[in-house]
Length: 180
Length: 129
Image 1: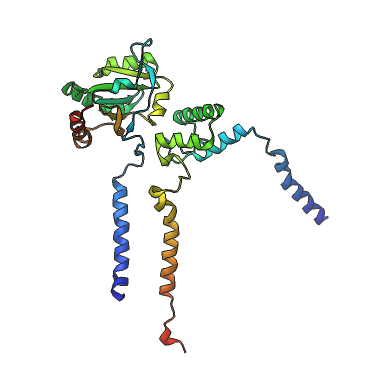
Image 2 (image 1 turned 180 degrees about the vertical axis):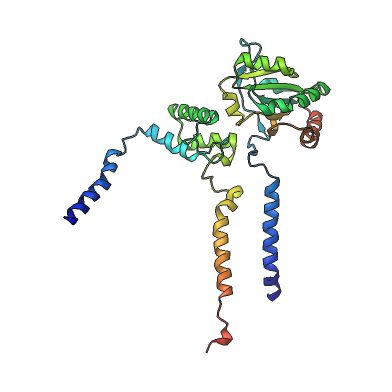
């Protein structure tokens, strides 16, 4: 008993240090999405180029999708754009979709003209309604959706090469092998 | 004279209350206020939706207003938001396994503290006469 009480303070300090050091590496702005490993919420929305056409969650079926929420006024979206464009060219077997979040149509198009457009097309969410359903609270956010239309991953903030290598690439390789 | 002065002062303390008496609220507005004051703006994390005028908070408030108007109750609206944004959006998250340390932690610390104090200041029985 004597022994236990003598190491107790040290143990408490170590436990505290563990929590503190853990806290240093956590980003309080990045919230875990409860949507991961659930079916992607349904939607019906037009695209940036074709205001007359509605698309829905069926587009996710039978292929692995990268869905990128972005807007023209978003600095971090620009930061990651080069890297994502290169990656999109390297991986044409993925479906690359943009979710333009609360932009003016013209501004969004101009942004793409200026910085390049690696996406197949962009869903156009003027009111941010689809964004709310997908738990978007700030751009950029990245979703990976599997061939069955389930959300499998979500990242908040710009995608860096490191993040892609460590978190996204291994997941995508797994998802490509799944049968729809 | 002094008593009169005190009386006047007391009356003045009470007056503003009468001026800002709470108006009768529509139950829908009541629910709206209650919800927006209990939900966190996930962009501006230490503000409630009620306090925030970030465009994200405004969107969420519009959504909540619409859901109330379409007859959804408090639990339905909260469940929807938690399913999209997680427990963090609630200022008072529900008690469940994932939040048990959050709710129980302070109590646990108090109990540990009491235990520690009792141990430290325990009177040595051999010294008692």
